[in-house]
Length: 250
Image (cartoon, rainbow, N blue to C red; front, side, top):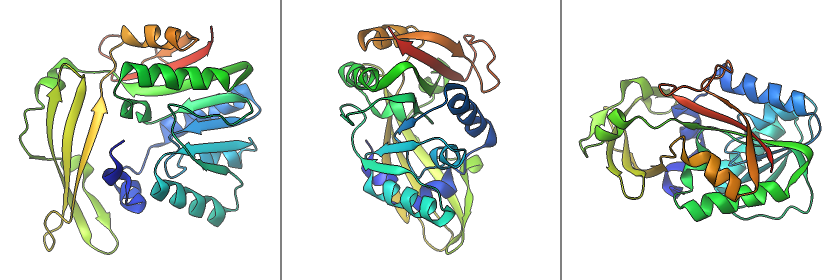
């Protein structure tokens, strides 16, 4: 995992404030499954805290201590009970099962090796209750966008945000694509007019192509039940920006 990128949890939440559609989707999945919920890569609790507030017994597993601390703070502030655990989604043993396990917001793409992905799916399989489901989303790789990862630093105006202490923060990104590893290796630069590059953080994300995922899931003891191309549950197509999977034990 790109640890430095997640070391400032409040900065992360301002950079990625989230949107209603993914949250509504995962809340609906939790309601549809009923029972207990486990989120892997739970971050600052943006999705799990609302799910817990809906009445689902909820557990969050997160590798970053800083993100986990912020999730605890937000849950306590809102009076929502969530079990927060420090751990690695590749290999964990919580000694119980869950009705829903979900991995949101491309968190799965921090696992770069096929073996790591399979181990994650095997761990999920061991933690699914009878009738349980794994749900996750990852982006659908665009060959055009990957080709544009040419190592040139460029501004990302759509990611600019306001920090209450610093003012307007501009975000630049410099990326290259390692085709052999299927990993985009980037450096993110956060700047204000008064403080250029006050944070410079690496971020590496794997691309998982649509033909790969069913095989990786099968090796992990899971099968695809449904696959969507957006949050409205539209069918997956080649030009969809999103791969959204609902999986069950094989």
